[in-house]
Image 1 (tube, rainbow, N blue to C red):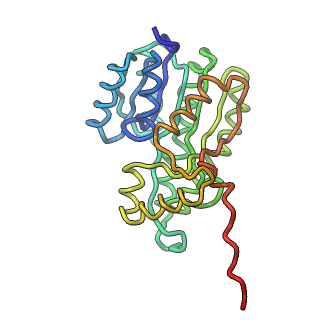
Image 2 (cartoon, rainbow, N blue to C red):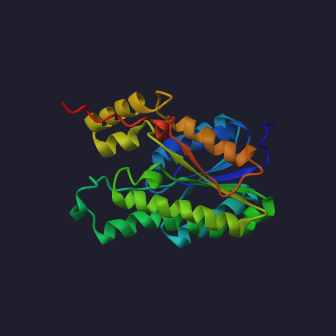
Length: 263
């Protein structure tokens, strides 16, 4: 029997990366987990199988968080299978990789598509799971980005959507209290295929080297590192709500390089 035996966690976008790392860590502690995917069924099945080997029960549910009907079905199927929802992790995310200077490279449709997943999706999931979370006196963690804090990242639309997610966190923390805690983490550079595929290998390696060279801790994040921060909010920060935590290896403390001296 693990410390989370009898607890239930619904983690969106959990077929790979941070979401997969999170459900595995929760399953290893005995929790029943929902492995959610939008398109990648094969990888999601592998994650669910890994969760069960680690000692937790796993439910595989397809669903696109941009669709309210899918969000309601995710919550309903979780309740049908496990009878409760203790933890909701809004991890599903999307972007369009586009240089910030290329304003013409982003359309209104791009903004709508990115907001639908990154901002509206977490709202819809919180609404769908609200009653169950209140009954369980549970917790929500939203996965944002340092892009939200610094106007950086893969595109202007992505940074704006994550900034809106941070504001949503504050609103939901007020609405869901006192029964449910709502917090957000803002990861910095996360190693993995998502960034590598989006940026291209050369740009990815350059960005990785830059992060390691300038962050105070001299490191980047792995999906497991971010999952640990999520579990901190879910399991241990029982007196904290409405907080936005930057998990960036100390990059925000990096000293700007001095301008070259004039001669």
